[in-house]
Image 1 (cartoon, rainbow, N blue to C red):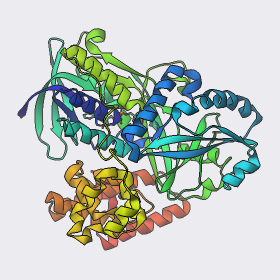
Image 2 (spheres, rainbow, N blue to C red):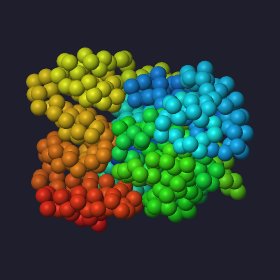
Image 3 (cartoon, rainbow, N blue to C red):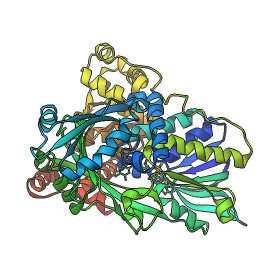
Image 4 (tube, rainbow, N blue to C red):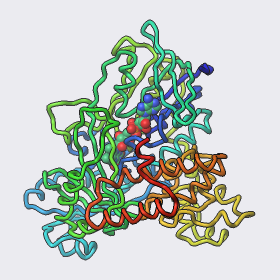
Length: 547
Ligand SMILES: Cc1cc2nc3c(=O)[nH]c(=O)nc-3n(C[C@H](O)[C@H](O)[C@H](O)COP(=O)(O)OP(=O)(O)OC[C@H]3O[C@@H](n4cnc5c(N)ncnc54)[C@H](O)[C@@H]3O)c2cc1C
C-alpha cells in the first residue's frame, strides 16, 4: 500500500459538481486532488440533456433558484462560450387546459428574457408554428416560441478538470474511493483503488468533499453517517439525425413535460423521472420508458415514431430528499452539508441536489465553506476566468483553409476545442495523415484523438468518446472503433490482446445502451452489425458485457 503526501482538499466524484469544486479549490490556492471511479462525466452529468436554463419550471415555483440559474447561464456563456449553443424551441400546445397552464409561464419566464440574454417569447398560431416547423402535427391548437442555451456536459466537465489541473489540482480518473479514513470523529483521508492497474493507495487530506452525486449516501455510510437523497432516474432516447429544426416541448400523456431537442448531429427525446430505491448502479432505462416518451411526443411530432433510435441513456438525479410530494415539485436547488455541524464528524463536507447549470455556483458555496473551515480568506474567481479554449473566437474558414480540410470538420473541432484547436492541429503541420477523420459521423480527426489521449485523461475508448463524440453518431462506433483502438493502443503502449479487450469493453458499453430498444427492423440491423464484428473482427460483443 502506497501512502501519499497530504492534500488540503480531497474531492470524491468527477461529475460537473466535483470537477467544479476541484477547480475552485485549486484556484483559491488549496492543494487539491480529485478521484473519479470511472471516467469524468460518467455519472448523471453524462446522461443529462445539457440544457442550461433559467428553469422553465422553477420560475413559477422557486423564483430565487431560477434567478441563480439565470445568472449561471450568462456566466457559463461567458466562461465556456465555445461549448454553449442556443437552441430555438417551440412549445406545442395540444389542449385547451394547457393554454391556461402555459399562460403564467409565458408571463413570468418572458419577464426574464433580458436577464437570460434570450429572444422574446412569441405566441404562434398553429399555421405559423407549422410553417416554421413542418414536422408539427395538425393536433396543435397554439404554440409558443422561445430559446434556451445548451452546453456540452462532457466538454464542460473535462475543461473544468483541465482548468483545475492548470491551477495545480491533481485529477485521477478510474480511481475509486473504497474507504474513508476516520478516527475519533474526524475524517483524515481516503483509500483508493486504481481500477485500471488494481493499485491501492492511501491519501491524507484536511477536508474531504463528497461530491459523488447519487452515490453521496454510500460514501457517508462508510463513516457511519445516514444521509438520504431522493434518487430519481431519467432516461433519454437518442436518434440518428435531427428530426426537427426546432426543439419541441409538449405535455406528456401523464401531464408532465417532455422534449425533443436537436442534439449535436442527432436528436434527443426526454426525459422520464422515476424515483428509485435501490443502488444507482442498478438504474437502467426500460422499454416502457421509451414507449412513454415516444407515445407522448408523437402527439406533437408524429414522425418521431418512425425515427431510428441509436441509443438510450439513463442517469440518476441526486435530489434533496423531499417526500410526500410528486417528483416534479421536488426542489432542484442544492444544499451544502457541513458534517461537523450536522453529525459531529470533522473534515467531511457533502452536497445534495443541484443541477448541471448551477455546478459552478455549487462549487463556490462548497469552497467558501472549505475556506472557512481551513481558515483561509480567498475570493472565488471561477466566474471570471474562462475555461481552456474559451479565451477567444476562432475563425472556422481560416482553420479549414490553413489545414486543407472541410469547414464542417473544422467547425466540429472548434465546437469542442475552441482556441485550443490550433494546438490540437499543430502536429498535423508536419504529418498530414493526422488530419484524416477517424470518426466520420462526428468528424473526429486522428490529431484530435491523439490530443485528448495525451492531454485530457483519454485513457480508454469510452473516455475518447466522451471528449470527442467519437462513436456517438449513427454508426455507434462500428466504423471508427477499430481505428481508434489502434491509435489508443499505440499512444498507451498496449499489447494486441489488451487493445482488443479494450475494444470489446467499448462495444459492450455501446451495446448496453442499445439493447433495450431492439425491436423489429432495428433488431435485424443490429444482428448484421454483430455478425460483421464476429466474422470480420473475431469480436463477440457479449464477451465484454459478461466481464
Ligand atoms: C436524465 C437527466 C437529465 C438532466 N438534464 C439536465 C439539464 O438539462 N440541465 C441541468 O442543469 N441538469 C440536468 N440534469 C441534472 C444534472 O445532470 C445533475 O444534477 C448533475 O449532473 C449532477 O452532477 P454531479 O457531479 O453532482 O453527479 P454525477 O455526474 O453523478 O457525478 C458523481 C460522480 O461520482 C462518482 N463516484 C461515485 N462513487 C465514487 C467513489 N466511490 N469514488 C470515486 N468516484 C465516485 C461517479 O462515478 C460519478 O461520476 C439531468 C439529470 C438527468 C438524470
